[in-house]
Image (cartoon, helix red, strand yellow):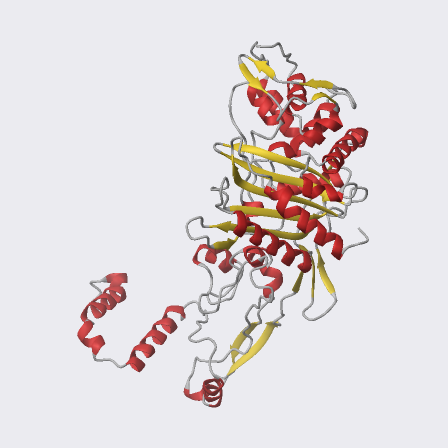
Length: 531
């Protein structure tokens, strides 16, 4: 009281008090008294901020009735009947994409508390902490009542409502739940059967994205990871936009389009596909295919054709057994990246979900990097980016911004209050439409000829696709990008199976083109026979 402790008097007094409370004193208290202490501490902690604090959730009907009937005996306490809980009728389907919300007891997540407090949320508010719950929290959460309390001359409190409470909106997604659950089942079954098996000892993850080719909205998205030791499965649909894969040959469609748009290759021009020797190092296709044009190069997946595109783009020339000289390696790489980005490769797609990965740019100063880049062995992309690439080809050059949310309505109403309309981020030049058509013919030929895998061949004329097998050290990553129906696509897809086979002569069949997509495409045509 004499002021010796200055402004710190109360904190020092409290510290002394706490030091004098030991195990003996606590041991003498009953459980009821301990609970009272916890409640009291919560009350005084929030006294200065006016924040509410939740003491109990899921309270029994009897306890609620008692508190309501005896409210005058418990000043400061009340019952909130406005609580709710999320229900997930489809189990794990899209669960990590949907995300989660906190309970009132958990309150604001510590890592997001500053963000939510700045928006006026109470510390005990139930808020989205991940996925679409976080992305669209402001639409889902609604607005609380804001009231002003005044006191009359008799000291009685009077409440004036400044802002009425309003329920949040219902969010409607573009997901086709029949396609979604089918895709989940197929991926889970495939990974469970082949993950960690002979020649697939490092196969532990599998991803597939299916987009509406007309507007870029997500029809289905699934992913799984496997613990190779326990064989336990974890749902990982967000891996489609949060993880990166080596694309391999499936990007060759963009390489052909680039070569013809830059006029270093002509539509229908042929080259001889045979092994190249550059500075003593051999570069080849899977085998020597002989004379190929642009369409056949995509059909059989000719590496040599793509190498010629890259060499000509760099204003270089090939001389057998001589090194490859490139004057402006970085400039050529930049030009190639510019073309691939036109198809959505290497950049964030802008999907309406948090934590999207952008891509990985390969590095190196050797001219051979251009050759590897032209066949998808340099940069890395997300499975979602590969799907937007497929959708861009399918839609005759429209690069759509993919999205989960279609629109929002008032609760239990059909009244649309927010629309998430389709957005075309960019469009391939109309003057190059003929070159894109050559790419589409190549994708169609890949399925019809069986080069996209025998199980895909029954869809000849109805599905267009391109496989991709990327070497990743001792392993290969399998991909398949495509769309259907070929003549007027309604859906585009990308499937990726990272490190799903050994990288030697015992290489196993492409998981995506042989196991996943044939079964899914069959299901798609069953659901939508008009397609």
